Image (cartoon, rainbow, N blue to C red; front, side, top):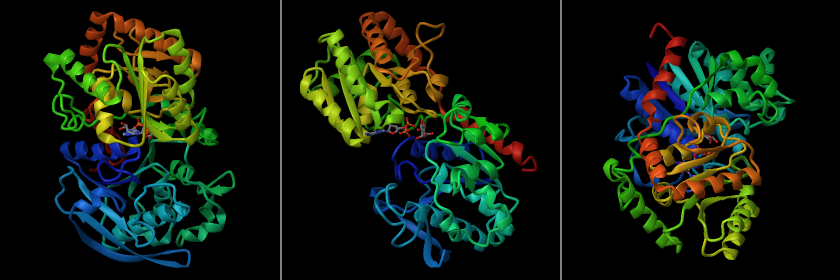
Length: 474
Ligand code: ADP
Ligand code: GLC
């Protein structure tokens, strides 16, 4: 079965968040299971593209409204990622450094999708299935089924995965001309709330859509930035599949980013060595419980609650724990956290920025990882934390709810709280501080959670079963 995954991000080529981790791992595991899965993404001028070899496999041009865009499809020559990687390069549009945040983002991602379709159409390729991820490739199902240009491909199955239902990529009808030779009787399939909405269109037109956790499938009908009714109406097409983690990249016993590995037989020793290194770097005492946060500093992640919650907790447990943040995002939140650090220099450290190696060290060297998310479609941080023996403290939502069981319940191993507010966070921190002092219990929990299986092998199979249900002939 031949599949193309279309995505704006893919680790290690270009990563902003968990979308990259998923698209960098799922195809690899699908290939191991006997599929032919490849990834297609925009070209970015970044370390990976500068340091690796590519060959041009196709040159063409496409029309974006009245603008003719010349594009190239580049293929990574070694297939070292475990899947074929194709990059769509369009001079002046898809050859920049950043993944998001350009004012012409609509033009970038529409052009990406048109170039992909033109490439497979003109080179006579016939994939069995096209798997689109998030709104950046959300127009593909509509274009496949309702544009005269691509009739050859009109029977191709499409699966659409929603990693984040808050962002839709919507734009105005004044840019309808970007979509070539479409059936104008079908434009309702593009529309939501008076605009062209790629996320809504994908949900309407794809054969099946998936969410990255079962709970999030349901939550979208309650909170999806205006698409609640659509998700309610289309829910029979939806399937919730919890993400996995790439256990080759995220293995504490072999992780090349860690100076001190954590082997199964020497968990306490390995954790302590990493904690010592981390605390030394940030001038924190290694004798206190270390609670960390990693992630985008945005409202979705509850990052705006951190400074106030920590201040209250520091006052409640004077000198009782340390807090470390790695993240970047809202300027106001960054400032609040830096102010917190200035007031509590002995208990708090803040690193504003993106640092993959430091993230690995934090998962390995912390005692607890805090995730007070308001919305968390899946969340990978808690899965990495579990694997690295760091107890997750999570708000009970989305994938956090599906992957973390409170240690107070039978078979539990984490700390869960219900509300994304300061009070619940403080209460959860108090529980963590108490648990830390019960060394034996903490050690037992660590051993248990490190042995849990959140690998892709399980989730990749769920996707394959879904594909097969769409195309039983293959
Ligand atoms: P999201 O995709 O919503 O940001 P996920 O939990 O799915 O959340 O994935 C976040 C990924 O990004 C994880 O791999 C996490 O380690 C990484 N990450 C987030 N912020 C940073 C940062 N500042 N530095 C390094 N890695 C980060
Ligand atoms: C999104 C979600 C996150 C999820 C990731 C990968 O970025 O915010 O919860 O883990 O996608 O699916």
